Amino acid sequence: MDGWNRLTAHELVDRMNRRECSSEEVVRSVLDAIQSKDGPIHGYLSVDPEDALAQARAADTARRNGVSGRLMGVPVAVKDVLNVRGQSCTCASRILKGYTAPYDATAIARLRAEGAIFLGRTNMDEFAMGSTTENSAYGVTRNPWDLGRVPGGSSGGSAAVVAADEAIVAIGTDTGGSIRQPASFCGCVGLKPTYGRVSRYGLTAYASSLDQIGPMAKDVRDAALLFEIMSGHDPMDSSSLPEAVPAAGDLLVPDLKGIRLGLPAEYFVSGMDADVERCVRHAVQQCKDLGAEIVEVSLPHTRAAIATYYIIATAEASANLARFDGVRYGTRATGANEPIELYKRTRAEGFGPEVKRRIILGTYVLSSGYYDAYYVTAQKVRSLIREDFGKAFSQCDAILAPVSPTAAYQIGEKSEDPLQMYLGDIFTVPVNLAGICGLSVPCGFTGAGLPVGLQVIGPALGEMIVLKAGAAFEKVSCAAGRRPGLM
Image 1 (spheres, rainbow, N blue to C red):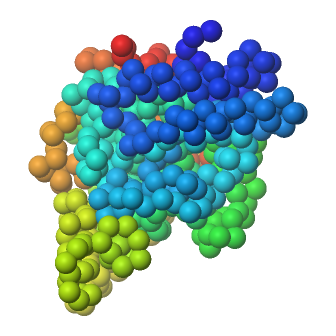
Image 2: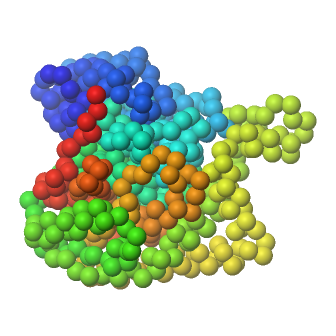
Image 3: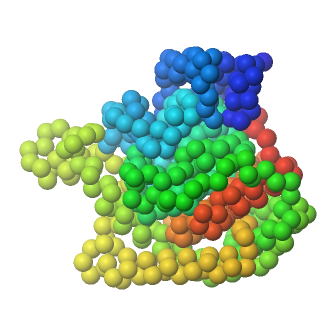
């Protein structure tokens, strides 16, 4: 059979276990897709075909010898912010050019233990700072549904390669919507887990109290499978939660009877694209038809979420990125005669404009005289946003909302106006500020044929209700399983 790359991970594992195909055949199919499609998309920063095929042959040998794994022989694409032993980890920045990871991130180690094959590094906004994947030091990634449009960000490369069948599944990270928004823009599934569910050990930090690793996949079942494998307590991450992770198979439910789904008025605002609202409201009606009870809820501090997020996130980025100074690893400016000059020149040459903008803003809000006015106030508002969700979840099991006010927009459309780009995160950043979970699942298309995502938001540790709702909706969604019409 041709086209193994078009299947899901759970379909492929089943086929390989029945000896209908080999891991080597699957990897070759994916590599062929990359060769034929990725030139104009530029979803990958690097791929090592020989290493991927060697991993595939090892997986085939292991299977013949009776070794099993939930991802045995399945190729996985990895956002270039996670350490994979022996692979580059540049965070799409010049400042880390040439850096090779000496160890596996915990999430990667857990996937490796289940037989996953690590195919390549996907493009991203530099240090995960952006919503378009235009901020990469190594070129723009394009949306496979329309090459003139952005794929979203910062996990835009991961979303694009999954949508284009250049990967079976991919790993992304979500600090303010960076899994869910590109999943919506590219028509795939993306899960942002509860903060602490997936260990951040081995993730290059942007904002440590907001960052979370999560899966990007072709269907909800694959997303659930990867979530189950990557999750769980890790002594290497002090924020890692000890709670057990439910089995992915538990999400297979026929309908939504007995589930209350909240609809927040604050997430349906003036200025939202009419096609996006149409698709999301139709999805809400479909959920109602599946037996869900739709209830009105209120999240009144949503209006303050963007300002709060861009104070807290940039403050943490300012501290986290101080380590990139040209002394220990990565790029080092040449010709500097003393340490301060070395720091200045290395950071000036190594960081791109969006990273510099956020470092400057973060340093400002942490500075003497402004700390209380900005950072402390932002933390208080964050508590109010968390309380809003707590009150809402006392009335419902999960919340339905748009992922973004718009579908994918033109490349360059917002790059000269960062504030407009930031405002596009209004429906995703509250989830990160509250530390809860959210899923993007395809729910329709605009008149121009661009994908739209439905966001299902759950309480802390509520991934299974979110995944159950997403899986049930996926069965009736007109967008499920549709792929862009590439060559």
